Amino acid sequence: MVVAPHTPANSKITETQSLNVIKNLIRVSISEICYLRSRIYYGHTMLEFMFYDIVDLFPDEVFKERVYADMHIKCLAPQENSRDQSMQDAYSITEWLEAGAFDAMEKKYLLQLEFCIYALGKNKTPQNLLECYTYKIKETSNGSTFSTSFTGTQNIDSHPEKVKTQAVQMIRNLVSITNTLEPLPKSRYITMKLSYNGSKTSWAMTPP
Image 1: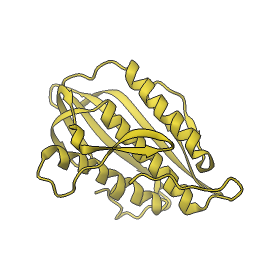
Image 2: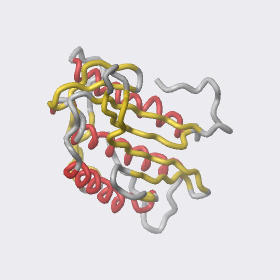
Image 3: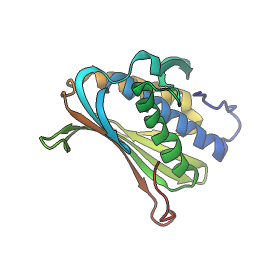
Image 4: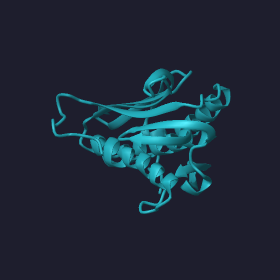
């Protein structure tokens, strides 16, 4: 469940609260991107999907409406053990985040997350980058902060103390962006790329 931590205005946000705020912002935005832009897939490999046809990627059943920062949003909420293929695929995306990106964040390994959509070439490999949604993580003395860069927009620096205002701004940006982008081609490919801090990362660190 997506819940933004409540911090009184006169108290300093803790490192744990800072991390949870960033996780929730990423969960919400990735879910909104999936809801607004992605389409049905044909097959997938680890951290990758290939898409075909211009129909919705996921049926409404894989999303649940949540209230986040006083907004009604759609979040991925798949059933883990479902036999439905759409549920399984949506669950894979949530695992990329929970067991991959967020695990690396907790270990202070993660520097950047990129959620990208490509057009597929003739040999069914990524050819042209169509959209890229980038999240950069930065450790500070006051906890973790991050900046976002979405297709067609400038960077937005996010600070946990201002989560409500920034969450609203981020979702509005996503809606605005997806309303102006060209329709995706019939064949497209989505990836999630994680960049680690080489000075801290264990060589055994691998995404799910």
